[in-house]
Image (tube, rainbow, N blue to C red; front, side, top):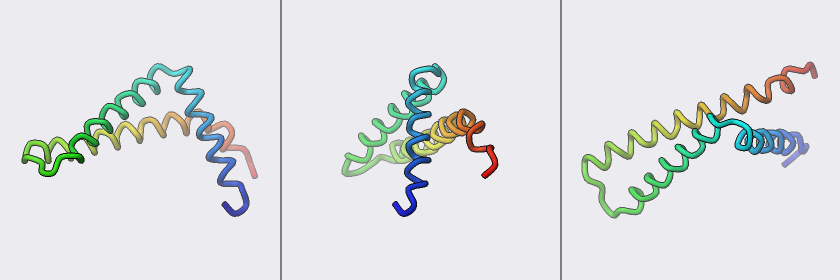
Length: 88
């Protein structure tokens, strides 16, 4: 991946996520909820045809999953902020 800088950032992000899973009840709950929604979406995706209600549920689940992901990423960014605000 080019200069390797991106790999370092990804490693830092993954490490932050790992630490948050160990130390933050809120982050752990968001992650659990995200996985639950993902599992339900996979079930719906496996069906050959969705009813109107299932189609609405799928849209709602995708939006909720994205909202949870945004919250999780905001928490990760907050925990990385002291490092990322250092001058170059």
